[in-house]
Image (cartoon, rainbow, N blue to C red; front, top):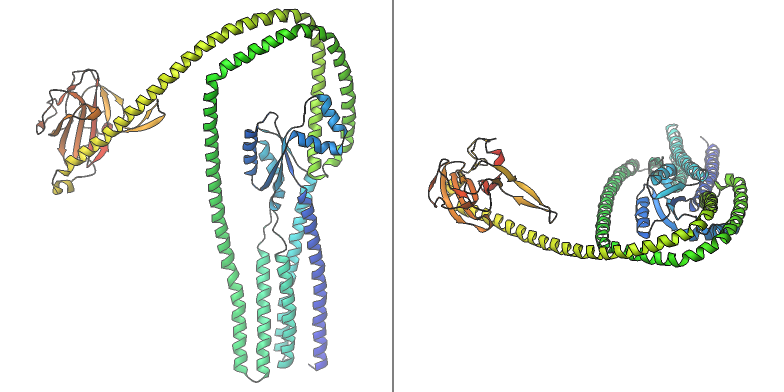
Length: 632
C-alpha cells in the first residue's frame, strides 16, 4: 500500500469517526432531553389519597406510616381540608363561596404521595394497596402523566443502549481493521500510526459509552445490566489497541522481543479489565440484598413495636376514661337538657322564620350546584392531564358535588320536619323537664356505683399484690426444692453420679399413683390470671380428701422428711440411679429419714385444709412430667 493510499485510509477512518461522533452527540442530546422531560413530569406527579372524615392526628399518623411502607413510596405530604380549600380557591374563587354555603368544609384531608422514579410504573398497584386501608376513602392519580414518565424512562434507557452498543461496535471495527491491515503486510510504522488513530477513536467511544451508561437510573420493569458490560468491552478494546500501537513502535525500532512482550502486556491488561467488574458487581448485589433484608427486618420490628405501643396506650386510655366516663356523660347531658329547656320556647317561636330561610337557602344551593355540575362536565376531561393539582381538584370537586347533593337532600328533610317540630315544641318542653329530673336521680345512682367501683378496684389491686406475693413464694420454694435435690444428689459418690442416666430405669406409664384423685395443677407452664403472667410447675397436684394415705410410686430410701417452705411437710425418696420422687402437703406421722420406702407403706397422709398432694419426679436433677410415668 502506498503512502497516499494510507493517507486516504486514515482520512476515511477520521471521517467515519467524525460521523459517529455527530451521531453520538445527537443521541446524547435526545437522552438529555428525555431525562429533562421525565424530571419535569415527575416533579409534579403525585398520588392523592383522600382520607375518611373524622380522623384524629394519631390515626393520621398510623395511615401515613402504612402508606410510607408501601413499595416505591419516596415521600408523603399531608394536605389538610383548609389547605385544600385555599389551593382550589386560588384557581376558582367561587369554590370558597360554595363551601361557605354548605356551612361545613366537605373537602377531605388527603396525603400526597411521591413515588420513586423506578416505581412510577407500579402506580396502579400502589393505588390498589392504598385503597385497602379502611381510613382511605379514595386514591387517584393522573394515568396519562404516569404513562408519559414510563415511556420517557424507556426512551432514555433505549438511547443509552444504542450509545453503548455503538461504542462497543466501533471499537471492535477499529480492532478488526488493524488486524486485517497487519495480515495484509502493512509497514510497521504506518501500522503504528493506524493503531494510534484507532486507539484514539476507541477512547472517544469509551467516553461516549461511559456517559450513556451512567446517564440515569433504570426505570421500573427494566433494570438492564448491559451498560456496565458494554463499557467494559469498549475499555478492553481500547486498552488492547493502545498497547498494540505501542508494541508496533517498538518493532519498527528493531526490538521484536520487546514488541512481543508489550503485546502480551496489552492482552493481559484487556483481560484484567474484563475480569474485574463481574465479581465487583456480584459482591455489590449481595451486599445490597443483605442490606435490604436487614432493613426489612428492622422495619418489621419497628412496626410491630409501634403497634404494640399503640395497643397498650389504647388499653390504658380506655381503662382510665371508663372510671370517669359515666359521671361526666351524665353531667354533660344534664347541662344540655337544662340548656335545651331554656331554648325550647324561643325555638318554637323561630320555627316559622326558619322554614322561610330554608326555602331560600335551598333555591340558592340548587342554582350553585347546577352551575358547578356544568363547569365540572366541561373541565373534567382536562383534569387528567393537569398533574397532581388536577388530580386533587378532581377528587375535591367530585366530593364537593356529592356533599352539596347530600346537603340539598338534608334541606328537604329539614323543611318537612319543621312543621311538625313547631307543634311538638310544647311537648318537648315538658319532656325535657322530666328528663332533667330523671338525670339528676341517675347521677346520684352513678356516684354510688362509682364508689363501689373504686372499692372493687382497691380490692382487685390488693388481690393482685397478694397473688404476686404467692407467686414469688412459690417460685422461691420451687428453686429451693430443686437446690435441695441437687445437694442431696451431690452427697452420693461420684461413681454413682456418673452412672445416672437421662431417663429412669422404669418403663413409662407403669408407676402407681400416690393417691386416687384428679389432677388439679398440671406440670409445666401455668397462667396466673390475676397477674396475666405464667409460672413454672415442676410437678403436679392431685386432689383427695384430707387424711388420705400417700404412698411412694416406687421402692427406695427416704432421704428427707420434714417441713419445707410453702410445700408444707415434704418427703423425698431416692429410688437409685439418679431417680427421685418428692411428696408435699403431707401430715404426720411421716416416714423418718433413712427409712425404707415401699409402695404398700404410706409416707404420710394429706394435710387437713389443703385437700391435695404435691408430686414431683426428678431424674439426674431434671424435672419430669409425672403424667408420662404414672399409670393411665
